[in-house]
Amino acid sequence: MKQPKILIIYTGGTIGMVEDSETGSLKPFDFVHLSEQIPELKKFNYHFDTHSFEPPIDSSNMAPPVWIKLAELIEKNYDNYDGFVVLHGSDTMAYTASALSFMFENLNKPIILTGSQLPIGVIRTDGKENFITAVEIAAAKENGKPIVPEVCIYFENKLYRGNRTNKYNAENFEAFRSVNYPLLAEVGVYIKYNYTAIHSSIEQEFRVVKKIDTNIIILKLFPGITENAVKAILSTEGLRGVVMETFGSGNAPSGKWFIDLLKEVINKGIIIYNVTQCRGGAVEIGKYETSSDLGKIGVVGGSDITTEAAVTKMMYLLGRGYTKDKIEKYLQTSLRGEMTIY
Ligand code: ASP
Image (cartoon, rainbow, N blue to C red; front, side):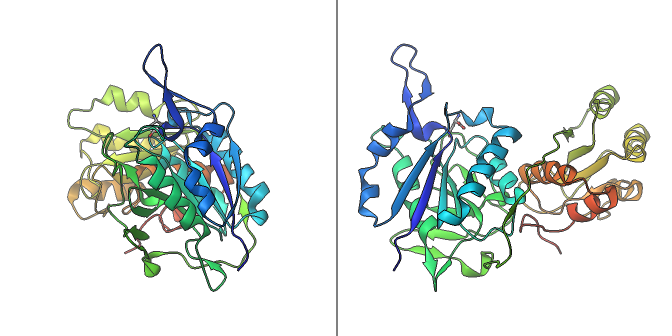
């Protein structure tokens, strides 16, 4: 068997952090030390190359230009490696995984994002196991084909489809969830792949879309939200898309002022994407009276998509330069397995 080649990319995050001796707060350290921390990697009979972001960044500072830099790095090295492991802070990992899933068209290799809650140098770290297993999954093949040709998150014994996840716990080792989509693999003594949930291999040319339009906002509804607040948000200069986090199965206040405001922006060409504030379940426009008006004025339903995937999908589709109709159609279509079509 050919020796698998894996590219490890360290973007930053707790996994590679140390305590500042003066302030006691966590700060990123050089990737060289990270590889020194995991001598176990040598036991894999794989060829590794590493690339470290300079300087490493806390994932709160992740932004579309950094996604593009990361995507370009993978594009440049795509043909030379069997898989990629991206070490990333957990805070915005679900956004990066979702963004990459859209930016990579016809992806046919594993891109496994992982990180940790405790730095790798700490005795009880969760980082070692996360890192080592992510590497094994990135290299895993069957009949010469990658088992998981997707952008995934691996964390605490579970492999998730990246664009189905959200970070739900700030301190548990099990920091992620994918409520609306099954695990792609579960790890114990064996790595048990859930073959039916995993994308099958695509034999088309890999392409990377590097245009992202950030002229969007999230409008999270809450009882008591004022007309002034909604007006201010919707009059954001340059606004092209709104991810509207609604109640339950896609419901919103039915007051005239609210519906009129939405209608006004829709008529200006702004797209409103209805996603639920609930972590599980889906938007069903028209199920209740409080959502049927939304459908009538042209709000687009996002089914069971996560907010993280909705935000990055909108940025990607607006960046593609498609017409409004096409964007609205794609927002209701599963492009990378990010939503369930009922
Ligand atoms: N603040 C860190 C980050 O997201 C937390 C982590 O690495 O998990 O970069």
